[in-house]
Length: 412
Ligand SMILES: *Cc1c(COP(=O)(O)O)cnc(C)c1O
Ligand SMILES: [Zn+2]
Image (cartoon, rainbow, N blue to C red):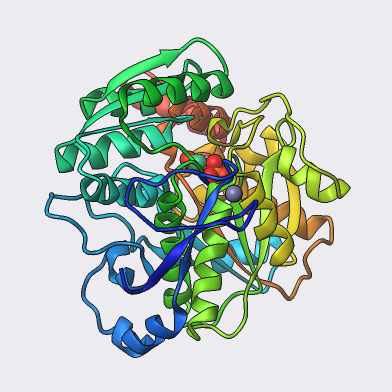
């Protein structure tokens, strides 16, 4: 990989060779970050060359990715998700411009596909045949799907609270699924022990430094879809912190390679009932574990696995932190619904955060904002119904339809 220099520890600075199977720092156990040669990347790719590419997936950015090629195995089409300007919603929220990046339309319906697609390519490079992870749900279903397409076997650990839609995906993709009666923290610990014991390829958040490199492609796309004119802010929901870390890495890579000339400020959105990272930023002190009290299961992470990269990303981007209540998340799901975008609770949390940041004066009314929808509402229909309610239910009779319309203010 001529574009990659090394894997650097974010805690002690030790540099490691970027081998396919690396996990955490051999010296101190810290989390690794892939370091690139931006001069080389600049010499290989221009904005114009990129724009002319027909490859409509995350792999169109191969010069920015830590891979030799994309492997010999079949793969799902991950990335190049839709990017919408939401004019009516911008007006309602009170910002100058609002763009929605809908990553819920990825093959297994979340942004996690970007990380899992990368994990599968690296697992092939590492010569593995089994991949494992623990997850609040979406990392699991995306790994199961991407691995199934490529012919890998998977062992997947999910907390018992994982929504049915996500578990159904796991079963459908033929994963070996272990539903752990405990928290995400308990689930993670058990998976780590099992991975150690059986030597599976590790797709656990933060432990595998390549995952974030996959996730960062969402930012490469956003920048390209904005024709390299970045919005002032980019909002994203935060659990373990890998997504926001990846989002920032993508923008930094583009900046270092001369593709964009300013970095957006990040809006880090967590749930009020589980916001260890935002609390650390707001109070200017180290993070501490919190309970996992939110219906947004994908960001119900009391012990974040990637706190350092997430906190760096928020601070270095001069970011804004916002915590949203479950009711605010449900309201944001309805707002996205008015744009034809169906988000799961954690997927809508970013947009809930934009609304609240405006209301609290944390971002100005002339701001331009991109909000990333990280997962589809079909993953969690119980909460979608909670947000949007039940339909009119009647026997098949016109007089009853008229009566129902009279009551609900329908057509006369
Ligand atoms: C995983 C996930 C997040 C948060 O990503 P982290 O890396 O855990 O911070 C947000 N939304 C959805 C839908 C997710 O699946
Ligand atoms: Zn280290």
